[in-house]
Image 1 (spheres, rainbow, N blue to C red):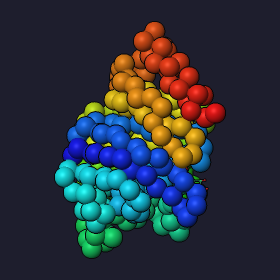
Image 2 (spheres, rainbow, N blue to C red):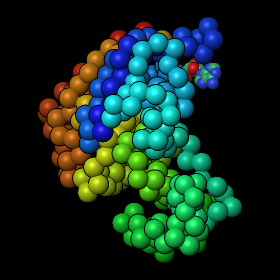
Image 3 (cartoon, helix red, strand yellow):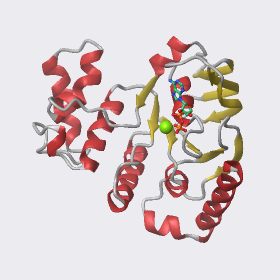
Length: 250
Ligand SMILES: Nc1ncnc2c1ncn2[C@@H]1O[C@H](COP(=O)(O)OP(=O)(O)O)[C@@H](O)[C@H]1O
Ligand SMILES: [Mg+2]
């Protein structure tokens, strides 16, 4: 589903967060948002998902521009993984289905069918504190994906992971999206992550956020991550994004 953001501004009282942003995300494309900490990225995701209303401008998803319509089309993965500590991995993953009124047995069965593909087979009964950081993120992502919504809004999904796990998770997400394409909005403060995973990347300025650059990624979700991120055109795009980020942070 196509995402359209037109002239969106937002404030929390006197604190101006977003300044007349316009952006579009293609259906089945991955749109990246990078920007300095505190510029309003999480706020923008909440607006997209219909969890807040913009003060000005419109956001529409597949033609629906009311908050309720957007909420029904988006699955939101918040910045912290928010797994329930007393629930097993499978019950955490099944939560999105239980919330929609599906019975426990059926919800668990549906989730169980995905554990293998998510590299989680054998960990169904484990509690979050028994899983590695990467595995917790996969459970949280499985829960986001299983809801069956056409749009995924992911807020810094790998920020808490170490560099190696993060690179592995990026490859894993790239593969997951090749198999099961969705319209994705990905927030990250990591320019390389954005350019590897996204088709297009918008660089936001410091608050109130405006768009300082929009870049097309040279090799989105390439199967060979290491080769993709060291290619000269990728390095050039990364430098351009970094420059925009620096200029916009001043
Ligand atoms: N509910 C809220 N009420 C008031 N201010 C908020 C609220 N949520 C976030 N903020 C402030 O709005 C700004 C943007 O926050 P946020 O969208 O979380 O930025 P980012 O995700 O880019 O780090 C920050 O200065 C933050 O402190
Ligand atoms: Mg944030």
